[in-house]
Every structure is written in C-alpha cells, then in structure tokens.
Length: 570
Image (cartoon, rainbow, N blue to C red; front, side):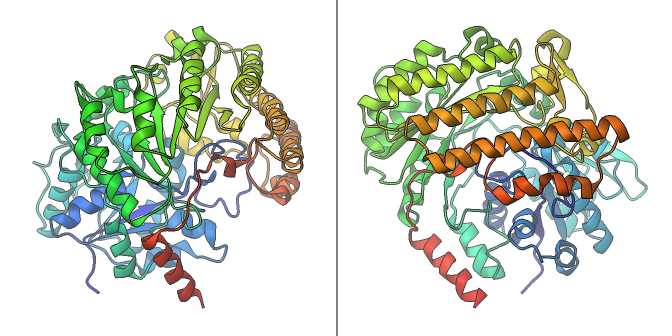
C-alpha cells in the first residue's frame, strides 16, 4: 500500500488520561463523546473527501478512540509505525490543548522529517503561539481550509516554499515565522461533500475500522450529521463560533450556506445506507430568502424514515414544525434556551424566551414530533445559584405541562470547561462579567491537568465563582434527576444510581479542595483512591446519557462494517 499524503490524527483531550485519574464530571454528559472528547471534528470528513477528489491519499486515525476502547493499546507504538508525507492534528476545541500537543510531540519524535500541520478554531486563534512549539510546522487558519490544505500538500510533495498559500502560518528551516494573509474565506460551500461512503471506503483501504470510529459508542449507535453553513448569524456571548468569533478568528463577515438542495441530497443519500439518526446542525431558517422553501421542495420528493434531529435557534414562524413533520415522520427537535430567566438568556444571546419555548413545545407535540430535548446551562452572565435552582424548578413545570407522554426531555449542564477564545466574553471579560484564569494556549494546556473539572474551568463570573458553578450544577442536576424519575423518564433504580454518583462527586471535589489547601498538589494515587467509588458506578455523572439517543437500527453499510470488525477480532 502506498504511503498516504496525509494522516489526520485525533488526540484525546488529556493524553495520559488512562494513568492520570481526574474527576471530569459532567463536562460531556449531553454530547455523544466521553470526557476524553474522542469525537473528531466534522472537518475531517469534508477535508478527506475534498483531498481525495483531487487525487491525494488521506487516512484518519482516531487515537483517542483507540486509547479509550482498548486499555492495552500503545499509541506511541502506532504513531511510530505510521508512514505519511505529512501529519495533520486538529486543535478545534480548546479542551484538546494538552492532548494534541503531546501527540504532535510524539509524531515529531518518530517522524522528524514529516511536517506537522495544525488546524481548527483554537489553532486559528492561537496560531502565533502554536507555531513557536518545536514540533509544529504549519498552522492553517480559518473555517474552510480544504483548498489551502490541498495547496499545502502539493507544495510539500514538490518541496516548494508555501509563501503564496492563503491562511497559512509557517516557519522555514531557520525557524523564521511567516504569516500569510487570511484571504481564503469562501462565500459558498459548493465544494463540500458530506458523503460518509468515502470514510467507509477508507476503512477497507487501510483495514482499520477503529481508526475511523468517531466516538466510543458509535458502532452501537452510528449517528451521522450534516451542516448547512459555516459562520453564524447569532452572537452568543461565550461562543467562538458566534458571529463575532467567526469574524475575529476566521475573517468571516457573513455565514456561507450550503445550497438547500445539496443539504437535502446529503440527507437522502445517508438514509439509503444508514437507518441511524441524522443530525442537521444549524437552524434551517437562518438561510437567506427562500432557503427553507427550497429545502422542503427538495425533501418532499421522498420522506426520510430515519430519526432526523433539527435545531431551533429562534422562535417559531408560520407552520414550520408542521412542514418538518411531513418530510421527516420521525422528526426530533433540540432547543437551547440556556436559562428560564429572560434577562440571563437575553444577555447570553438567546432569542427563545419561555413563551417561545412553550409555544414550540405545544406545536411540536401536536404535530407528532417524536422528542424535544431542551438544554439549560450553568455559568452564564447574570446567573446566580438561586437562578440555577429556579431553572431546575422551571424544568419541573415543563414536565408537568408537557411531559405526560415522555417526549419532552430537559437537561442542565455546565457551560464548558472553557469560554471560547474569540468570543465576546473572552475578548472583553470585564464588560460581560467574566474573570479568566487562563489566557494563553500554554496556560490552558496546564489547566487541563488539574484534578477536577472545577479546577480546569478557565472562567468564573461576577455572579458565581468556580465553587458556586460546580455546586449549582450538581444541585440542579440532583433535582432534575428526581423529576425524571417522577415523570417516568428514568427508572427508579437508575435514578438512585445517578443520585449516588452526584453525591459522591461532590464529596470527592470537597476532599480534593481540602488536599489542595494543605499540599497544593493532589497526587495520582490520592485521586485514584478518591475516584474508585465513582469509577465503580460507571456511566455519566448527572444524567442518563443513553436517554439522549434517538432510535436506530443498523443499516447496510454500518452493519457490514460492524460484522467486518467482529470477524477481524475472531
């Protein structure tokens, strides 16, 4: 087999997570991946498809998944065995600051002549700091690097200097750093392909299913996703993918939308080879002009039987949910009002208030929508511990009013480990009531080695410090867990287990604080002993994570891949 032009490596959030015990708590309880954040960015799919269409060989290796799924797996041994003209490592989410840097160090150790290329949102923001690390050769900036990456690989293959490649920060053999203009910001996304069959072909080409699996439970639950844009019309205060964040980091002044016909085509194509859920990322109604009408016209040719998940960013208009339920008989909605308090939600940047939420729930249930997930957040500006408690109470009100047939599912979770660099809050913290413990990439890398998720947070607010954010999260989750049991969303036995996990997590965090007050550091063996009870319980911390899953059955291509994997293990 010929050496690929590029191997894309996805690192775990914390490289030595298997030997470094930490209380990672609820930081990933409402997303598919585990606290290792083993799910690689969707850009892997679009970059791979784009490069292959131009004749380049590309392979994906999800190191995080391999390390998570096999305790005996040796990542350094695999890295040493790989051969490629160049290696790409994502630093999209800031939570990978420690793990991605360790993987880059390993790659440079064993492949000193192979250039290492970084990309992603956080890499774009910290490109000048990132390029100074001795094991980083190139940083591609921006949200649409498919074409700049193609040109960079071409330059690497022909041993040419990349001085004319847009969006590139690089250094020459003397270590001198160059910053090419951020000039590649496409107005349309016609070049993108979300055809997952390309990934399937790569599995067979490299005889490596494990390297391509997106997250831990994907073989059991092979959800797929499509997106309609790059950029955003919203300006949520802590989001690096907001309107302000895209403009500051990616040079994007307005969103670039995929053609609605292309989006519909991808959904129909996925449904032909997978019966798993399909997540449509972004609110369709943010498309310009007749975007929604064109999308429905393209979809009405044939209804899709998969469970399809649609996001609502804004209040309802016209008969939108009715039209959704016609083309998607198994339609599901996700809504993130963030807080029940209208002032908190409005300050954060959310447009859906309680009246808008309740109207959406009423219309969704009356139109046969299968499920509505509602996400509230802890760690927002103007939010107090009392406000968080009132949000939990409001969840109970929603369940009393709309939860009779178990289709409404509210959740409460912390904002994130990090307020995103490039967001309004990160750039103007005093104006928005935030205080930050980390500003540089290196400070974040070090912070993610702390013993608990509370100590990893890069922020606190003028209304809640880190202790209060953690405590309010656990208290609200405890109350909501009991509400789920009361409304038959969770069986009593599992509810009791989650309640015990929450109590034990609070105890461990309190004990870590006591140890840090005395000695400054908490040693690995101390954390291992403290974490033993929680590890024995298993599962997510503050909710039943599998309740977030939509119904699925293995369709042709994913069933074939799973059978192939099992055959390879025998």
